[in-house]
Length: 148
Image 1 (spheres, helix red, strand yellow):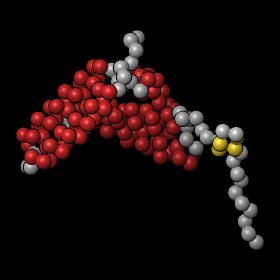
Image 2 (cartoon, rainbow, N blue to C red):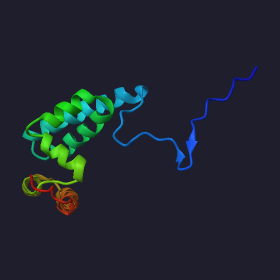
Image 3 (cartoon, rainbow, N blue to C red):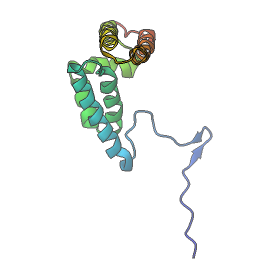
Image 4 (cartoon, rainbow, N blue to C red):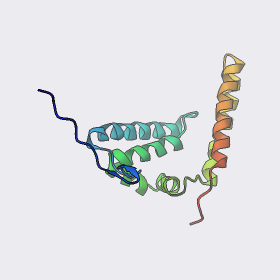
């Protein structure tokens, strides 16, 4: 005896029903978002003291994943005095503050100098520097948040 077909989700005139962008993930995926949130937060914290490992992208990724997998972690990140304003600016405006841009660019320049001084082959340092240059250009093209 054949199995009945799976239920079909209702469609509106605009197309298939979809979740809101910031809505929590379905229960079966929540653990993966939770894991990604904590792993990326850990990498971001390590990036505070380890040159070459960025902090901001990992914290933003953690907030993105936490919004889908752990509302408690997301609320804690938003309430954090160091990370909260940066996350709120990114979520609201897709903006990065000028101070963060300067700090990131300075750290990338320092890392580029260290790479050219320590890399066994010049092209290795040049490749890393080229990638950081592309990231810096992208970063400086991001808008700045409105004054508070």
